Image (cartoon, helix red, strand yellow):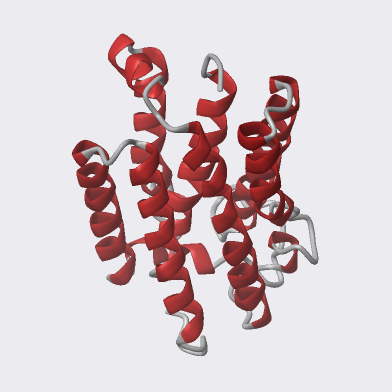
Length: 222
C-alpha cells in the first residue's frame, strides 16, 4: 500500500475518475447500460485493488492482465459487432472531445505519485509522457471543430496524435510495472497502478480516453 501518500492525491484521482465517468455517460446520451457497466468495472476493480489482489506480481498468469482485459473486451465487442457499431454512431463527439480534459489532472496526479516514489519519472511530463498536451488542447479542438467548423482532417490529425500519446503512456506504464516482462524503471518501478485507487486509471480512465479517440477516428462525420 502507498502509506506515505498525502490524502489529497488519491482523493483528487477519485474525483477525476468520477468526472471521466460523468462525461462519458453524457457522451453516451445518459445510457443506463454504460452507467451500469462502468459501475461494475469500477466497483469490482476497486475492491480487488483495495484488498491487494494486484500486489502479487509473481502470480501466473500476471494478475495485471485482469486490470485491462474487461475494458479491452468491451472495446473490441463494440467495434466488431453490428450492434456495437450501431451504438458507436449514437455517441456525442463533442463530449468525447471534451473528455480529454481529464488528462490534465491525471498528469498532475501522476507527477505527485512520482514525487512520492510510486511511479517512475518516465511516466510523467518530466519524462516520456506528453499526454497532457491532448488535455490542454481539447477545449481548443472543440472550439475549432464544432464551433468554427474547421475541416475534419484537422480533427482526425488531433485524434491520431492523442491516440499515440495515450498508447505511449500505457505502454511505458506496463513496461515499468514490477512484472515478469518489466523493461524500464527498475530503480523506481510503477507500483502506483497496482494500488487502490490508481488501478482505476488502468482499468477505466485510460481505456475510456483511448476508446474516445478510436470512436472519433472511425465515426462517419462530426
